[in-house]
Length: 539
Image 1 (cartoon, helix red, strand yellow):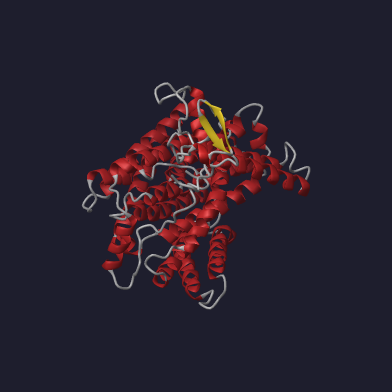
Image 2 (cartoon, one colour; image 1 turned 120 degrees about the horizontal axis):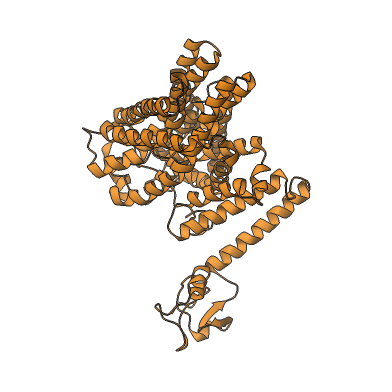
């Protein structure tokens, strides 16, 4: 018997205690609120009190009950602070109040989905969508300032890309470099072509608009793909062959290519800027992003210096700062595609140098810091993505079915092309199928660029262009609604079934033996985030 018992108990003390088969719904709900714990004897339960059926609870509460209580007090105190700063903005209908409600609702929605063993981001997406579309509560989503929404999404995207960069395995990336390019470009080109042909035939759009729609729909969402892959990698799935590294790196290149292609077609349709310069933006963005990340990643090898106090803190501040500069600064120089690639690269290069300094059993403290930041910004990211999908944006109801057909055809062709792109590699059939479906979700890019063509058409006041721009926006919104939740669910459910599971310690040792100059390299350097301690925020 543990003399230090300080937790809740479900130990039966009477003959009336229900067994598993006779438990009522109330018993099951209580089981969620007051989880199982160690057996507590009568002598240890002097401060406990029977609540029903022989069950006892020790005060103060522990487990999920204490967690929910703590979260409630955090929410109340946060709102009081916000209200004291700005009464107008923190009252119903204000921007801060709406963000507060969205964050709280997204955390709760994510936790509920995690209890039924589904990805938390599904619950966060749904909560965000409900707050922007359900009568009576959609005032919350509509009251969110678009500038605040865009900025918070960019900050969250910065955090998750930095986490991905810190976890990329240099050994696997060097080994799979050609495969990364094939996986990134081959499925993308096939999907763009399929989307364009289908849009031209079904939606009667000109070829320029059809290819513009094709590029808009083809971009993969790093906001959905990256955390889904990191969760699988945290459990050891796919680490033996570097599949998380492959998919994450390919998704980043995919986005640069599609954003560039969309920009080229946008410039052609609206005759903006030099076409040659627009076409050259793709390679230029790639070069700038990689160069930026390499330079400042190497900078982080030497600063802060080894004799600095609180070195981990300053490393984390500098890393996040460089990532934010990349994401927020790249649009200022008209090269938005360079931002995500630079953010990913700076984390990768920095971690490459830091691994050499760590002992074999030493934790990656910077990755732990970014893990905590991700727990804070994850609800904002997915809640705001869900809130960005508004029913009012679907102007042409008659095009919904045809738009869905365009998305279905494009995704089917993409999956087939993705399987073909990894033929001749060491991956098994199951792993090839997973690589193909892992880049199914669409969200962030479509939310960012889906309405650009319509905005420019409205500025020109050209009815034909407005009609085509409306179709692009409607189909982009549909792609988010259809693929983001389905893609996240498919990745979470198929990963454990299609990928091999490898112990992380074994992976670290194997990678360290592969090369002398890449000591302590790991497939995806994940942290044991405080998921069990802060279960209400992460699953």
